[in-house]
Image (cartoon, each protein chain N blue to C red):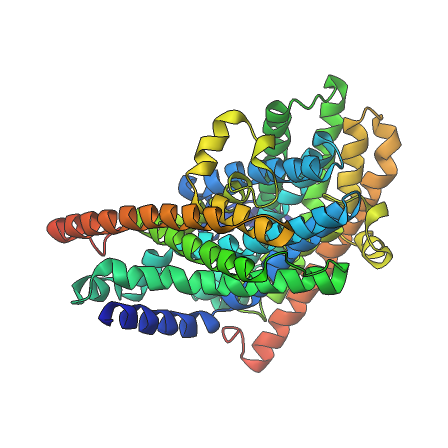
Amino acid sequence: MSQTTSSLRIFFYGGLTSYRALFNWISPAILVPTFLIEPVFQVLFFVYVGRTAGIGNARFFLIGNAIQFASIPCLFAIANTIAEERRFQTLALLLVSPARRLPLFLGRALPVIVNGFCVAAFTVGVGALLLGVSISAGAWLPLVGVLAVAAFACTGLGMLTAAIALRVRETAVLANIVFGVLLMFCGVNVPLSELPRWMAASAHWLPLTHGIAAARDLAAGHGGAHVSDLVAREAGLGAGYLALGTALLYYFQYEARRHATLEIA
Amino acid sequence: MTSLRLILVAWWLQMKMRSRSAFEGVLGVLWPLFFATTIFLMYRQSASGAALIGASVGASAMGVWSATSTTASSALQSERRQGTLELLVAAPASFPMLVFPIALSMTTVGLYSLVATLLWGRVAFGIPITFHDPFGFVCAVAAVVISIALMGFLESVLMVRYRAAWAIGTALELPVWLLCGFLVPLTLLPAWVRPISWALPPTWGAYALRAAALGGSPWLDVLVCMLLGAVFAALATALSHRLVDSARTHATLALQ
């Protein structure tokens, strides 16, 4: 088998197997409450808080929260794949295997991106129905594209948390903290113009900020060309985080092998 | 007196265990502040001073439920995983008297987040901590904490048969925030939702908190909150006896 074929197998089959085996949230008992019920209620909660405070409109909160909730699978799934390998004591076996690291690590991101995209798309669809938010038929296709790019960008950040998971035992705490930061900073419920200046400046370096802005523009009736710059920035940030996360994974696994601390975190 | 001592000792033991948990420690500190910060930033855009105080009080009560919903749902699962559920059931003390302190320890962590949210609102957003009736506010806080502990008690008993109970508990967090009107007046919710809200003790606790903070008498709301809490406690007690009897009869206590 050529090296390319082998890498492709590790990327696709290895990634899918890892997702199915290690992200045990795909059981319906967890999937339905976590990925289908919770995001819809997050949308409803902030829509009603917005109405009480007399700000925003349903579409603003729907788009923001639907995309932000994609971060739950994007952050937890990929961090879990590291933490669960360690819990099942297979992490060492994985890292001494001759498999190439790049497809091994990146392959784990692909099912996560699909998961994050599905959560965001489901929430936008159901939320629009429940709240009577109308999005023009022509906006849906580019909107789907933006959701996919946002899920990719957030998975990039997830890869960074996965790398840190090699050093930190409590990956659930870590992922929840990152989720909270994204909720506060990315213009999910508060426009960037209303955030303190330092928060707004930081938001431009986080995934989801540009994706949410692009999706809101599309839902408001702007064309795809209007948001291309935002989408490009979102994709660029995602690629940057993915590269940084992968590099850190390389570094931490090298350090863990050198100091024999792989399973100590 | 023996029952009170049992509750106190079990509560303290649980508090010590929770203080070692990063999930409940670090996240218990930060999680309510994420939502409170977002809410303060939202309200700051348009609302008046009184509305901001109301938001601060409501957001602080949200933290008590946050500290309870996920952990209470999986409380008995955790005991099962640790191999202590059988010991609890076999203990000479009444089983509900052993489960209630677990939920009470969770809401005690929530009490911290209530105070932290109020202080965070004061320090970061300049929201004054001034209460129309300070003594009434303290009593309303106690009513909220105890009633949510009783809800957590019922939740933990209800979920004992679900292996993935934590996921249901997590999914209940936001609906209860909405239904109990911590931030959103019940009049804004659909009419069919309101009877559900009225049946939940924290709804009345939230009324009492707002009345004590902004002006008005909290006492009737405190009373209704505690009465409904007692109903939840009675339900949880009856259900726990029933479930334990069933599990012992069928030898399924450790098998869920």
